[in-house]
Length: 221
Image (tube, rainbow, N blue to C red; front, side, top):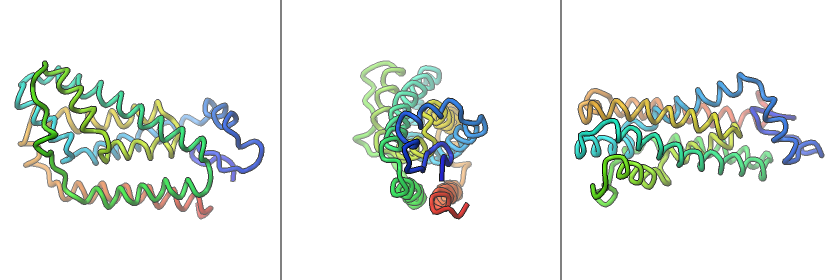
């Protein structure tokens, strides 16, 4: 079938590792825009009410220093999501096949169900303010984000688009869009937002992406 959304589905000699990555530089700009816009929207919605957003509110309350907290979230997210996107892209490069593409689609469907479950920040996950606002935020956000649904979504997006730079840029932007207002508005933001509606919208977005990937892999689109 050739290359579909940045993932080479061909099984012939031209579908090897080197040719995939050589063609990456020549991908159309529209694909990069799709990667960054989709990543931004998915993560921004998934982050609302997520435990990392609750962590941002907690840190803002404890330190009352918005700028170091924002910078800590930015650095932690860039590091965490770059690794996650790289993992997804490398997995797609080495395991490129119809089976893997179906697995990527299924992961988005699983994310749709996971998103419907309300999140909370456990007491043991709350950081102890032994260091300054920036370092505490950096370490806490990086650790709490491990295995979180936004990190898992980043892995799946990295596998889908095989573009570490643009996926990381999009997911990081999405995290900042969701968390910066939370830092300044605190729990008032969560009171004003209907979290159940946001979860349904996010789940629907994951569902559409998952079905789209599966339909493309099956040759229906």
